[in-house]
Structures are given as structure tokens and as C-alpha cells.
Length: 309
Image (cartoon, rainbow, N blue to C red):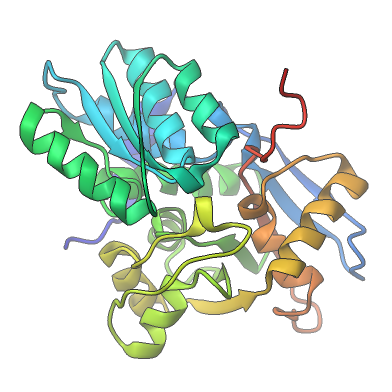
């Protein structure tokens, strides 16, 4: 599969102008750390995650068939694909596993998309979505392993550098790998990228250890967002090309980072949104003396919804 480069991300940024939020950045102290941390608050993006970038880039770059779009998702990608489709006037059919949870399922329903909840994991939802694609002629928007998706996600890192990113090292949570692939495609080796995964859902870490993509079991507090059974080919290719560093964190560390984000700066995020920070607060990643570190915070779709009616 072809990798994605900076030209692809530049083109995506032009398409996305006016369609996505330019999310804020902040340099924050606290979290039990001795050094301040640059953060990008991407959970303030449309539908609460970076996924809107890839969805809009895909739909704006191609001719969408009359049958509309179809997407399989752990929840966040489905919400973003449905949001983008509605904004651009296309019907959307979204397949999610039961483990997506009521908060993300409700978010998708709010977009007016046709929603089908599938028993099992993300892989089961993807199988059902592919069957619907073949049957209906709808266009599939892959959650993470498609060039247009990755290029759209790469606009986040491009934007962050435009906003004055100072860090030597950027920590990014990984599920299927679309976001970290976009970051690697934009940064190359100019800055260090650390891929952070839950120990119980670690498709990239397992692939790097094996030397090729492999299936993994997925579970844990962040599984409905970071629970890809196999890392994307684009991400794996870029990870080997750039020498990305991979670290794992425990569920308890993720939950503690969630709490720290709320207590320190009143940011309410889902477990996946706090996973990158958990690498720092738990000591899974220890910066060198003088190393400036940044954390991508994303994923606002906490479950259960604390403000549900």
C-alpha cells in the first residue's frame, strides 16, 4: 500500500479549510510532572475527535456515489463520517460493535445516519460494512488505513507546527494507526514520535515486535476507541520507515491520566484521549534531561455521558 507524504497533507489542508476546527494548544504544568507539557486539545474538534479531518478529506476528494457512504467504527470514526456526510449532503450508513457504548452510539444517531449495531468487536463491524458496501454500492470510508484518511489526520500535526509547536518529542495514542501515521508522514524524522498504546490493545507494538502486522486480542478501558485487532499497513510502513518509538500503558494509568486532566485543567476526555498523557504520568515514557515533550489530547466522548438526560 502506498504511503502518505507531506504533499498529500498539504492538499488535505486546503480541502479542509472551513470544514474543521483549528483546535487550541496550551503549555500546561502539573500532572505530577517536573516539566511543563505542550498539549493540543483536539477533543474540541467536531464530534469530539480528530476523525472529522480524515472523513472530510475523503469526501471532499472523491465523487461520492448516490448510495452515499458506509463506515465501520468503534464509535468515533462513525460519528465523524456521519457528521461529514450530513454536512456535505450525502447519506451515511454506519456500523459499530456493541462495545462502542451508549454515548458514542447516541452521538452517531444525532447525525441522522442509518446506524447498525453489530455483535462483537470493530473487526465484526468492518466485515458487516464491507458486505453492505458490496451490496449497495456505497463508498467505504476506512477508519485508519486509507491514504485520504491518513492525509486528513496528518493535517493535525501540520496545524500544530503552524501554531508554534516547540517540542522535541510528541506522544500520540494509537489504535488502528491513522492519526500517528499522519503525524509520521508530516514530521518524518524532524521530531521524535512516541506511539502510546494500552497494554491490552497494542496492535502496533505487536507488529513492530513481530516484524509484520499481526492480529492481537483487544480489551480494556480504551478498547472502544483504540481496539483495532491489526495495525494499518500505512501506519506500519511509516513506523518502520521513521523508527517510531512504541510504549505501552496500563489501564490504571489511563484512568489516572483522565482524572488528572480534569483536576488540572478541567478537560473531560474519554480513556483514549488520555492515553498519550498516561505514558508521561505513569513513567512508561521518561524524557531525557532537557527534552521538551508534547502530548496530543483527543477523544471527548466519555462513557457514560455525564450529562445524559
